[in-house]
Amino acid sequence: QVQFVESGGGLVQPGGSLRLSCLASINKFSSSTMAWYRQVPGHDRELVATITMNEIPNYRDDVKDRFQISRDNAKNMLFLQMNKTKPEDTAVYFCNKFRVSASLIDDWGQGTQVTVST
Image 1 (spheres, rainbow, N blue to C red):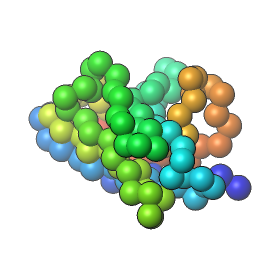
Image 2 (image 1 turned 180 degrees about the vertical axis):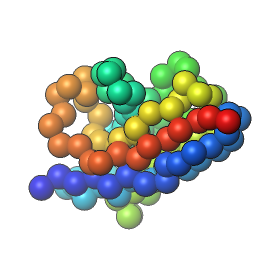
Image 3 (image 1 turned 45 degrees about the vertical axis):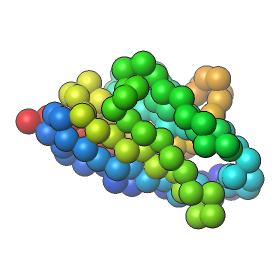
């Protein structure tokens, strides 16, 4: 059974930082392109960042230069360092394998809520 456990979310003021973590209990984690997604109520889940098995990152334009994705293959962990946060970053954040569309994924963790507000 695929399992993802996300943590590290919370309330942060605009301009602040958070570090999200994900423990992925999946086979072949080290050879998988992994991703962070986020979802706002009433909207589709969207891709935030990806990282390949060779640790090459990619980001959506509105988080580029502010977020940093990383991984620890020895521990099956995925991370998202969020800096210079904005109110529009408010969402529930999820980790999973990368898919061209989040709608193709059936197994999700509970996610971690990030709220950027004064």
